[in-house]
Length: 196
Image (cartoon, rainbow, N blue to C red; front, side, top):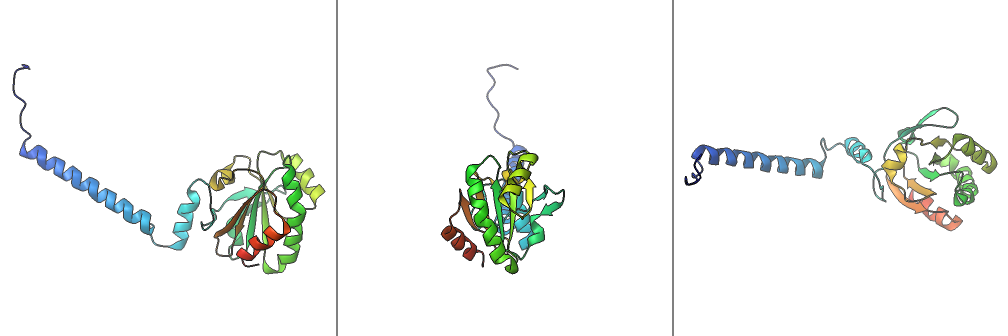
């Protein structure tokens, strides 16, 4: 093709095709914005499931992402089974000294609020099952202990350290996130936030 030929003006067909592409892109962007702002079906359960599928960090006011893990006793445990109940999810490890400090406080709270349906789910992180069992036995903790070997729950919640506790109300909403050991006073405030 000779280099001295003048550049041709766009044809009407090309301009029309660009207008169609631009219109489709605009329509797609509007549709995406509506879906994001209102949820796919507007159903609370669908919104919770979509939020739960996202990676952490989980913050106060967010729906607690569901997870299913196998306990140290070999039982499958899912957070959704505790719907309607206040739940404390604590990420911990046997090699974490502050985790050992918090377990007696939590054990007492579980006894004191058991009649109200309060449950604790202990999710182990980067720990060996045999070490977790020994730790649990020595601490007297009697709530479900859930090894998270592939970090599925860890990735969904996005805690930044151990122990990290998520206080979830009966509606499945995280009301408090606490990093580190919890004092009696802090625990009382967190439990009040989830209706206890």
